[in-house]
Length: 146
Image: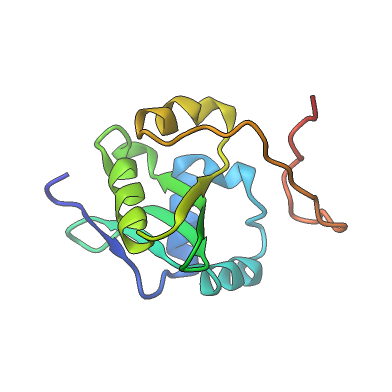
């Protein structure tokens, strides 16, 4: 990770963000077919933490929404597959936590990555609910209910 810099970003380009999402496999789980929608979500998210190569290429991102006083929701955590397994995702989470140090960090994750968040020492909570928008255009299929 010596040649990777992880820091809060002032602005993330839509195309670079979408490249990370696609390269990580996370794009399949998000409504990323509309560049305008993605631009809006990036503009309204803070902090957005990026991992960049020495050449400035974005290869990882942690996108959050924080109220600055109580809660920070980590919406996306993605690292391009070729860079996975190097501790970059852990560093993205740590920089996010540092940027929002006085807030509770909340993560909703797919079951296949539960062990990663356990490994980071985050605590599990037994209940999360969500409401789907009326118009599901551009959304992936919602998770099955149990």
